[in-house]
Length: 218
Image (tube, rainbow, N blue to C red; front, top):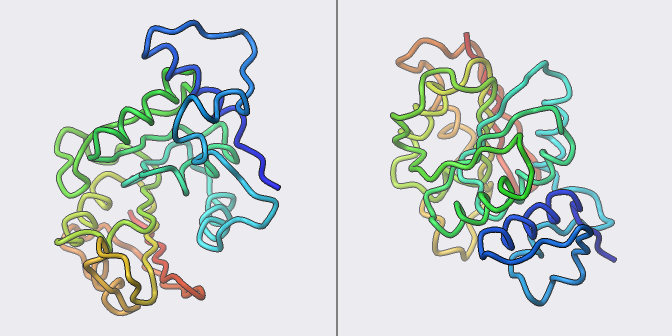
């Protein structure tokens, strides 16, 4: 049995209809739009527990006092929607370079989710965003897609006030878009002895399928 992140899914429908000049009903049932509007499956949540990496990040956030998060490479929202559902008082900036993903995210904002700000951009070069733009930067299952993950790590450090969290796959797989395979050492190396001298501590953790870095900044 599956349910949905209802508020977020309804916002996407509302924003989609508004963007296409269609009437928006007072009451929106996700089930009524599953066939008409694509991408609603992205808002599904199952009765099973969350992905271990999502639970791990949620646990860290609960232990912190933060008001803002930047999500690098939001894609279909596998990390973003659970976090937004859990932490409604945090503002989220969702960055993705895919124009279709940006439009999809923007429908959610347009549909009434005011604590979401989508940006179309390259996470290795976000010069239009000022230093220390958010309390926390998250990059979950993104660095393995990049030719130069060090540039993304540099931007994450520059844009965060206090913390950076990164997760990557632990094992090789058959995804042709994965062009990097990290070890604990190589993930640590992106942040250790960083040139900005803002890195205070890097903690590396290992789950069954992921390596996770939790970076504290000054």
